Amino acid sequence: MSEHDDPILEALGNNVYRVRCAFCGGRGLKPYKMKGWEIETYHNQEVCPICDGKGVLKLQADDLLIPDARCQGTGHEPYNAQQVYHDRACETCQGLGVRSLTGDVRVLR
Ligand SMILES: [Zn+2]
Ligand SMILES: [Zn+2]
Image (tube, rainbow, N blue to C red; front, side):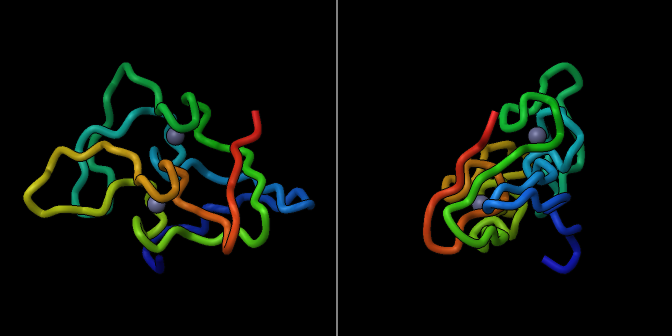
């Protein structure tokens, strides 16, 4: 996690958080090409499917919101050196890059 910025922008209370969208890194565009865990290029015309192009998400966790270890907080399926083009959301956190310590995380609209 150390090379990534803290995704939590604001704690709104009641386990509700405003977070930067991990999947697009807050850019709002759908990632196209990954280099390791970093997004190298984006689809020019396609909005991020996780945040609908907003770049931020409002999430409610059942308890503590923590970075998802499976995707190292990136929201992407774990990196495979064989697979350069890589824009699938992490199955554990659904692309959010974070998860609840013991419960669920919901996206608030
Ligand atoms: Zn996004
Ligand atoms: Zn994940």
